[in-house]
Length: 127
Image (cartoon, rainbow, N blue to C red):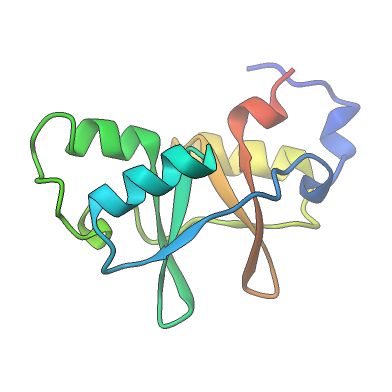
């Protein structure tokens, strides 16, 4: 995988999408799908008692709901990927790429002081 070495010195906060959506873990798959559609996002951060606990992506939804493995009223806590893998906004792009490759993921919530500040995807980082 190639990436522009000049871009690799940039910080995540310079390339992240600041539109982020979160839902409580008790929300349903239907709630998540509607929110993804209306907000035009491909991932939702799952929270429980104001703590980040997981992520539900459009891919999770497609595989788990689209295949009828789970009903539409399933709580997103059953669909989410956890533990949540995130990255601090002051980290370099190269760190995010390594983290994504190591964990075989395409989206990373971006945080600052344990609060979500954005989302970054592999396509944001690759030239």
